[in-house]
Every structure is written in C-alpha cells, then in structure tokens.
Image (cartoon, rainbow, N blue to C red; front, side):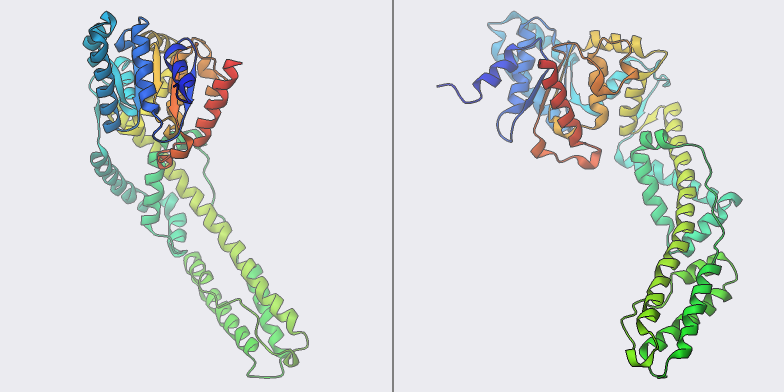
Length: 421
C-alpha cells in the first residue's frame, strides 16, 4: 500500500527538471529524499562531481556522503552510471556550506583577490587573532585625541571596555553587514548642557518653601534633589557631571501629605518630570558617544576583514562573504558564475531552514544563467529549472545564532511555488 507521501517522494526522484522545495517534519526522511535525488540525477546521466550537496555540520556532511556512497554501491551492479559515480564521488562537493564556499574560492582565487596560498582559521585561532587585534586597538583609541572625549564619557556613564569588546565581536561575526552600513561620517558629541535641568531642579526645590511641615517626606525628597543639584554644579568636567547624572536620588514622588502643601500633586508631578529631563540629557550624549565609538569599531572591523583577505588567513564567515562577493563582482562575476554553473550543475541543500542568508544567494547566483543576476535581490533572480533542490523544516530551525533566517526559508518556499505556476 502506498505511503501518504509516496507522490511527493516520487516527485523528488522523477521531476529532475524542476526546482523543488521539500518541506517535511522531523523523522520523515528528508535526508533520504536528498540521497534519492542525488542518485536519480546520477542515473539520469549527471556526473557525481557535478552535483553539490550542502548541509550544515561536518558530521552531517560525512553522514550524507556515506549514505550516498552506500546507495550508489547498492545499485552499481545493475547501473554502470552508479559505478562511474563511485569513482567520481571523492571529487564531488558533499560538504558544509563553509567548505563549499572555500572550494569556490580555491577554484577562483585571482577573481576573489586572494593570495596563492590561503588558510582557514579555526574558531580558536580566530579568537586568538581577534584578541591580539583588540589589544592593539584599545591601545590606539586610548591614545587617540579624537576619541578621548567620547570614550571618557562612555566610561563615566558606566560603560566598560568589555562592553565595547562584546560589540566588536558581534561586528566581526557580521562584518559584511557592518561594511554595508558604514557611511564614513563622524558623529559629533554635543556638550553636556545641564542648564535646563538645573533650572527645573531649582524651581522644584523652591516649592519646598511652601511646605508647612518640616518633617514631610516629600520635603525631604526635595532636599535630596537640592544636594544633587549642588553635586552637578560642582562637577569639574563633563565626565564628573555625566557620572552624577546617573547618581540622582529617587524620582518616585508618591509621598508627602496633602495638608502640608498648597498643591501636593503639582510638586509630585514636577519631581517626576525631572527624571525624563535627566534621561533626555544623558541619552543624547550617550547615544552620540556610542555612535562615535561604533563608527570607529566599524572601521576596525572592516579593516581587519580586508587584512585577512590580503594575508589569505580567512575565518569561516569570510569564506561566505568573499564567495558571494566574487559571484557579484562586476568585473569577474559573470565569468565566475558561468564556470561554477557548468561545474556544479545541480545544488542540493539539506536542512535549509538553518540557512545563512548568504547560502541562498550563493545557490541562486550559481543556478541562474541571467547575466544581470548580481544586480538583483536573490528572490527576483530566475534560476534555471532543475538546478536547485531544497530540503527543510521550519519547525526545526536551531541555527538562528548563525544568522539563519526563517524568512529566507519561507521566501524560498514562495519562490519555488511561484515558479511551478
């Protein structure tokens, strides 16, 4: 008796001339279908090393290769094409996304602007290299007169160098996005103007003259605010004043007795309003300082990526970004894409719900014969029929921390359905 998904499984094996997206739940045999697609392509006359099968982990890639090899061996006695495929399988691209990108770059190093010898740093080596660059960067920004004030103000506001370290690490993990958004402008940090706040403070404190009870708790709160105003005025520089802004007394004003004040509610409202006034002043300066330092961190991040490219010492994310860049390159992109389209005639992508958005760009650019593909968003690029096969399950997405984007999965599902209509 046929299984409920027999028709879908048959489509995987038989509809080799169509772009297919296979969505299925856990344990339903998605990877088995990918293996069957691979073997069906071989038996249809496609050479095994012209098929790229891409997944996310080294372990998964190894298991996928083993399953494909086992299936080819099982059919080799009756299928000459499966026997030939076994000999070519070791030359094929059954690998992780990063390994596939490395292969792409190794096949086109000149077009990618890489030196003759390229090494890929593992996570430990990448971290050590980052820490060395970070230490040198910190020494530089401390001695940089342009950055002295924004850095001092950030530290006075309670930030730490460790916070900037964390931001820089995130920039490095997404340096292509940083490069896209870097605009080269320099944010000016405004002066810390406390005059409006001090004027409000003086006016609120003066309202205490109307209190009829020296022991009233709201009056005591006004005394605390008066002392805070004195500390703000005593600050010798913006660092000290910004530090004091963060050491304000409580602005909670649900205290005081109505009979002790001409208008107790008005005093309470004025006290509460001080917090918003304080926050506005502090936030304007802090945001400007953060933007100024972020601009410097962005330059540091992009320069580090360029230095790695020139040295041929790449990190995992570099492989993806540079792979996409060479496909989109205005001078060499068309030629490289044509060569790769000939080299990898079919792309099979496993666990597609965990895709990095760059992965789908790589796949679409390779699978399209449109010479203008690089100038279009990937979802507007027409791919050649049968070039792409996706397997995935949106409910199993686990790699969002690696920039996996479920919207990519859903958009690609829509694209595949649209092309069938």
